[in-house]
Amino acid sequence: MARSQTHRALPAELLANAEWQEACRGRDFARIFRLVKVKAGIYPSRIAALCGMTPSRVGEIMAGRRGLAHIDVIERVADGLRIPGALLGLAHRPWEIPAPARTEGRWPESVPAVPVQPQRTESAEELDDLLALADGRATRSTLTALRSSVEDYWRRDNAHGGATLRPAVLGHLRYVARLLDSAEGGLRHDLQGVAAELTRLSGWAYFDARQYSAARIHFTQALKLSHTRGDGLFMANVLSCMSLLATYDGNPNDAVTLACRAQDAARAVGEQPLVMSMLHLREAFAHASLRDAEACRQAVDRSRDQYERSRGHEAEAPDWVQYFDETKLLVDTGIAYARLGEPARAEPLITEGLRRENADQQRGRALHAYWLATAQLKLGKLDEACTSAGLALDLTATIDSPRVSGHVRELHRRLLPYAREAPVLAFEQRMRDALG
Image (cartoon, rainbow, N blue to C red; front, side):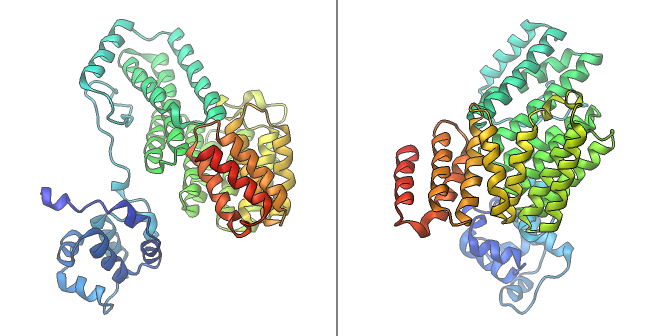
């Protein structure tokens, strides 16, 4: 059995290989099997054993004399070779989101365990257990303090990026898990809400660190926790995060589905206009990635209409959506158009959004400066694009957000055709100084 698991995980460099991804998109199993043999050292007889085929059939497929058409066989190959479902146009396979390990006595049966990285020693966890016992039972004051901590984490995430917050957030999550052991009634229900929020925040921190698989696991757990407590609006919130993750992870069709499902979840508990406005813009992002101009514009229009409905009722919206104000609507609409490839519509919106934004929103401003530079570059405004890129670079140097720094490096690649131009030379020097 140990031998059968040896080759189950494909090498990361193979999964990132352009030829491999092209072969998967085309479901070219002759090339897929050949690449698995050459790059992963899995020979045809082993492929056959893992995928439930005969060696002769695998040989015929590799020689191009047979193909694979039946979806159940394709799914069997995906599961046997551990090919992520999205690469083959399939839904996520069950093994892509592993069941989190349970720690005896930590999480009550009704609350799914939250995955954490195995970074702590046994003695450290024992010490945490002892300290939790000494703290006694959770109280309303404990709940108030925890909610304040969550709010502070979100402020720090927006100002400085989420990557460095993960250890603290996960530590708080462990603490809430222990408090749930002794909590009852309404207090227990509220603590479950805090646990869901901390789990979503963990997912967001991994997303900002560009660790998309870990982010997906935490978002999935947050979704389960919010479902357990019957919080449909928060489920919509988590689904919207998963939609944005899918957009970044190159799965725009999944992103559309998740955004629409989030809207359904919100409607099921009574439409909240500000929430719906945010969700429609997430849908617009996904349509823009698909280059579906009509669907993108319709989603933007619905977002604007819902925002107008929310005016005067903002205080009735959940705390987690209060960030979505008129400035955010403006700049996100601009980003949707930039993603769609309509820079002339995007540039004035993002410019105005940046003008209005608070200076302490450094991570958001860095992202928005990147999208502004992208739009300006497409409009042929090289000087302005480099100025905006410089703003994004300066802000990136003060935050810890691999997602943002990845955008800046992508922008640099787009500037390469203009490498001899003075504004680009100046930007590259600033980039070397800031990022190394």
